[in-house]
Image 1 (cartoon, rainbow, N blue to C red):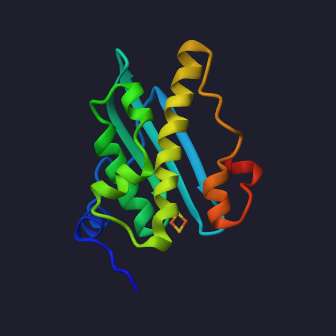
Image 2 (cartoon, rainbow, N blue to C red):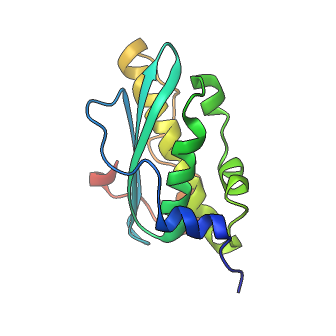
Length: 150
Ligand code: FES
């Protein structure tokens, strides 16, 4: 069995930027009821730059480590750069994840995209046109998102 990198373990044990943000500019909420993981990501945006990011994740270690890393990586980025941040970039920054846990990193990417989408909808009235649900993660977990998590 593949093991976790030291960085994954470190971010899992000491996650950065944990907690709710007061009056965030954007919130991204994604969930996976089959494995029980729910991720909420908050962003603060000023002059098109993400100045702060926080998260709350109820779930597996890989989901917590990727949430932690994604909040670290987006701080200081402008929205265009942040939207280009892939789950693979997050995984690379953590020195990799076991293959069976790669889908957990998709959750982090989707939470970030949804937070940016939320911000754009609130400020410009026009979001990114994301689908109602996120097919990639659901395919990996073979389930549909229940109504209350949408
Ligand atoms: Fe970690 Fe599904 S088991 S997000």
